[in-house]
Length: 189
Image (tube, rainbow, N blue to C red; front, top):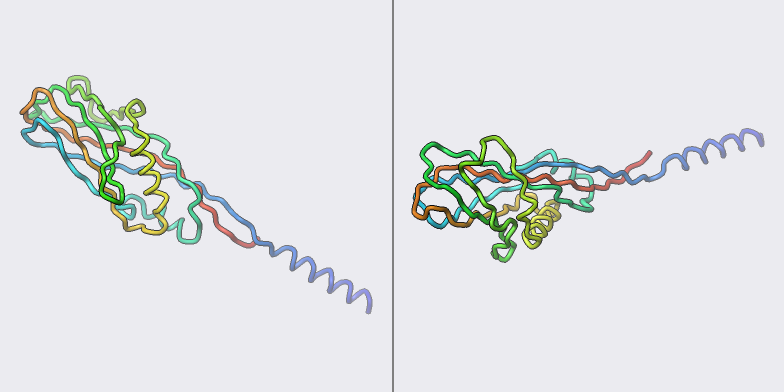
């Protein structure tokens, strides 16, 4: 009888110790982009573009349903530019802004120089030399709030000046970014 009781106690001990709660970490990565179509007679550029996260990456939102977003790291930025034959702009200095929750435009990239004779379609040009910490930190903050408000829209603004002034600009500019996140989730093993 003693051996049966010891056996049952041992089995119960093994069952209860094997059902431990375990924390798992996932590191989803996603890429996002926003585009500006510039087709107008212009001296000073001002264009707006809104994106929502649900439009950017539904699979990322699904991974956040059962987990907790712990950190966000913006890994890199680049741009590409497609120039139409109708373009008369020789060069441009452009800035990219992100709107914060109060509606203030914070600079993400400043004085990005575009020489239309040098730019090649389909080539991604890095933006590291033009980064401004205020705008990048705001993007990181917005991404961190993704779990609470996945339908939130983010306003990006393209501003700057073209040369020669009052010339016809015919180009599409795409800004691309890559983000790494850390998500934790609890489970049993």
